[in-house]
Length: 309
Image (cartoon, rainbow, N blue to C red; front, side):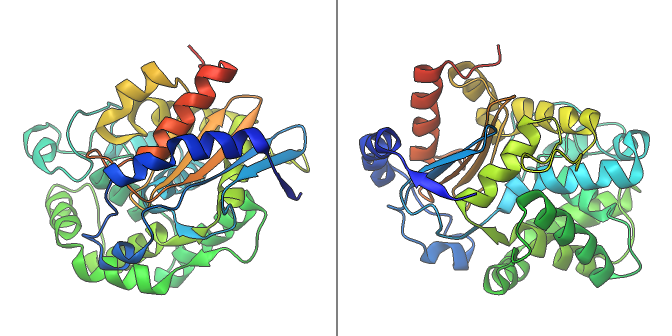
């Protein structure tokens, strides 16, 4: 499917672009600090076989925390719900996404949910495989299928940059290994996780993945079931309760749809039975969400009554 530019979307992007001046790119990851903070683009994938866009929708960016939804879907399919939720909880948290405090105070000492870093690391640790490359192949082939794009891969520069600076994530891993939540070699897990976060695609690819979730796990082009309906439901529920870091409650009130953001400035949003939405706006607010991307989604939600509530 080709995307067509949409005049109204272009107007909405133009209206909110000035907000990028009030945000900041994620320069604590050196490779992400090189991007243009004024970038803003959107692709809207209508499940009725239409795609609309505004801005440079083909510009590539890394998924970062958006990848947590995809690895969760894969692991639930491979391992089953009982296995996964024995080691990772289902509760939202008001703490920052990289916090270690809840691990120290919770009994048993397991991450509260799969959308915070600790939970995502535990989930990635559950990807089955003989070695790093086998696990990686399972993940990237699954993501390529969701995007219907065999060219999707990871950005090696970003992955290396994250690997070299991921001291807090290593601390989370060692804490969880001490308490039996994860097992195996920590450095191998860190390499797999940084590759996962560095998976690169454009707004169109991301919107198409959103469309799969909008259709409860079905491929919007072929009708094939890529993700079982119940697993797609679980993923969307986590997106609603935990997907926008510790601003998830406010987002649910103002926009009211499943969404997941990443510190690269990406947002994947899902309007059930209607649209998958991919947004890229790397200027972030203090919570780590795209500052202009959030406003863009809010404007669309208000205009078209997106809210599921």
